[in-house]
Image (cartoon, rainbow over all chains, first blue to last red; front, side, top):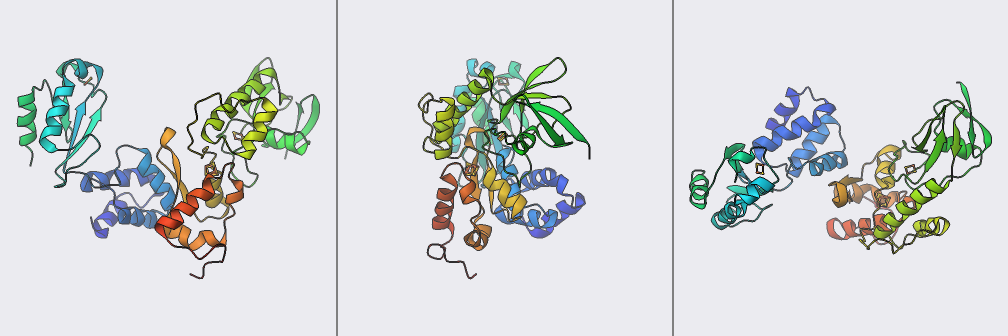
Length: 150
Length: 204
Ligand code: SF4
Ligand code: FES
Ligand code: FES
């Protein structure tokens, strides 16, 4: 992500230091992670010390300081999904992507995380990819869903 | 500025409006234990060790004296069975993280805290924030900050700033109640930038 794009995002928020989190969220969603140069740029423009930005960027799970894949896979391990076979879904995802929760594959295609209840237990076991919910997954369906992303 | 009259440990104390109970006590020569308080810094209220019992009109409460401002006719007890018990437990919890801190050991002796009560989880830093706040508020350098949260929270130096500023300052080192700050600095220095040999000011 280049500085011009970062500046645009900052300008959209009138360069207010109070918009820091909003600015970081936008960079995160566009770029999938927060590179150090981006944080430095944001700090200079908003007049917020880097130490503070770093605290915020590590405080919220929505931010990542390491590269993330193009697609964010969240497998629900909540109680309801657990009894409906979340473990099988997770196994399948791990098999197909070769990554464990918290990791990103080398092609930067998928990042995998587990979550505890996505709030739609009746659909369990549930997996969310880029905010889209896939429910009642069998192993085969899990595979089909994953393969539909490129 | 209005003057406020209150009682601390039975003694009449005159304080300025807006003063904290801790400051009022100190001005009257009454000591309250603290860990995260520093006179040059904005009150933080992080360690809770300075907790005291305060009695107002028909109520008694535990308040954190370094952030609680004085009120007319407040009756403060800086020690009581309850206060001592709380301080003892807090110290025992902190000692699980930093068992060798001389400051904690002294307080532990005073309050009968057992340093082995809780399983050791040596993270050394007790999150008092003195280093982070001193660097930000007094020195305005922001060379060190917190990262992460909860039990994973830790301090982290910003190498670009630390490599330029810290050798000429190091004013935060003696503030740390444990030796973690110094260790973390040496660590960062070794990993991220090579400083001049011990103590000589950087000629950056
Ligand atoms: S390193 Fe020391 S001074 Fe800094 S927050 Fe931790 S305990 Fe406090
Ligand atoms: S437990 Fe998975 S959605 Fe609630
Ligand atoms: S000194 Fe008051 S909370 Fe730490």
